[in-house]
Amino acid sequence: GAVVSQHPSRVICKSGTSVKIECRSLDFQATTMFWYRQFPKKSLMLMATSNEGSKATYEQGVEKDKFLINHASLTLSTLTVTSAHPEDSSFYICLMAEGGEQFFGPGTRLTVL
Amino acid sequence: AQKVTQAQTEISVVEKEDVTLDCVYETRDTTYYLFWYKQPPSGELVFLIRRNSFDEQNEISGRYSWNFQKSTSSFNFTITASQVVDSAVYFCALSELNRDDKIIFGKGTRLHILP
Picture (cartoon, rainbow over the protein chains, first blue to last red):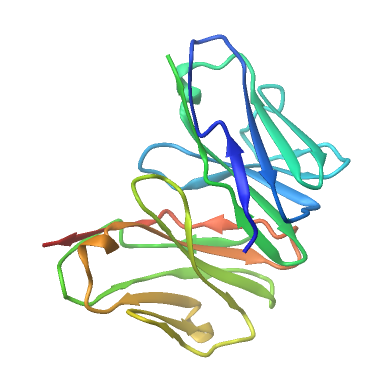
């Protein structure tokens, strides 16, 4: 399968700062990318869907101004958590999809103090 | 709407026992994929299987086997002769092929294999 990386794998930040998470594929081009969030001991919840060159579509209850998604290319998507607060502490995972093939990144654990 | 139900929140079995994790799904589409993922404590999702809705054959891979029953909308996962390393959270998931390939997850089953 394809190799999908996320950077950073773990980040700790102070409340009020912004954090950018990168999702990158080394050998797979994805027209569509998804971002998921997973709170401790919970399931993965879809946050948003983005297609290259288009604005992201956010799921109900996800603030688009807080979680900025930039689908920069077929191999790169970024999620920026703006003005992070402790309740944003979570595990964020990207999914890259193309032609029925789907590959997850390894996840980024965000802790907001 | 698409939905995945994993009714078993947590299961504990003694090592070497067989264990079956249940998964029931809902979809309006006739073409879809079903998945099982393993999530160890590290958090990274480990892909186990993807099954196309047109392929109802059961699958066996080592100690793992999957039973796909369209008539009951179920896709159950059995681990035979369980081992401590099988301890993890297991997610069943669904992707409707006509909806941007997004994957919807069940709530997961936390599996404890006791030595």
